[in-house]
Image (cartoon, rainbow, N blue to C red; front, side, top):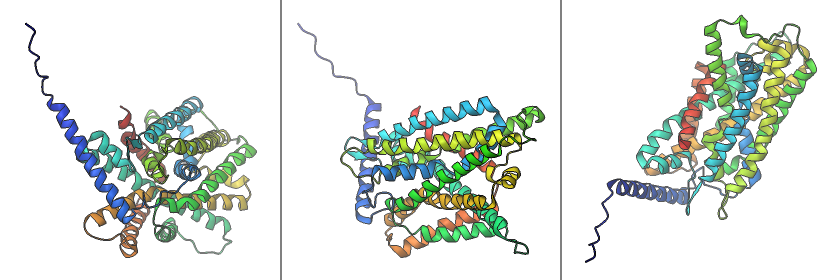
Length: 406
């Protein structure tokens, strides 16, 4: 007689995973319904092309940290800095491709960074794992951009003003930038930023080229030295860790990749178009990061400043008009960068509004977005420690991003 077939053992873990996925799928469907009804900032306009993704990627990647790369190189030396530049360039490109590839899961689109977290870790757990570090990075980056803009505008004033003239401090210039962002923050959705991102990307390429060519033309300065022996052991350790964070911060666009991709229409699958823009962006990144980091360190050695454009030897040898132009290019660039990183935050705030029965029409949008800009401005004014903040945010960014690839 044949054996009686035994029923397969019940797998509780598989049931829990299936239930978790179903809850996330339901939450994702609810989010898509809100997207369609209220035209939320991330998905309000899905008509972008691959060129728009290129503009957004350049604007978000070639950030304020690029001008601090010579100082980071000085903390590590030629060999270590060159290896790290290549390492972060290739690994960030690879992981960005991975994230872009995960935008489409079956017939669904994961339009937001936290939606990917929910898909990977569950509806509630995913929010707790991804949202806090993402918000820290977004808020911190926007604060860095405000500090950068304030320093650049302050530099322009000092270069252009002929004595006697009023002495406006850094805080006043940050406040001016806050006013500009209050206006730009009323752009309704991500795709509405494409013109600003194009201008910002062009400005970033331009001021990086000025920094590179200027350092090469100036050449190695008589007081430039490259030996790290002058630093104590504790200084070497702390400077090295801060430099690592600065290099990591320079590739901080992963937190907005899915939001950028969400502005592309589908079908067809958006991954190829997203990566086409990304590859263009990474060519620009290679020129800017390697060029600025190595040329600035070559010219000034360990005497290079946190921002290569304000290094005294650079300011003394480059024509004043060119320095003014470069600093204004930085301001225009970070105007766009601020908006690219703020838009996902605006999306979260407006989602909370509509989920609680309010509208995201202009009056409410004006209120919540202005509150965010003012809060970031207050933080930037009270904590203008640019170099240290770069390293801190770089570590937070990497910790929040690379958990998806474990």
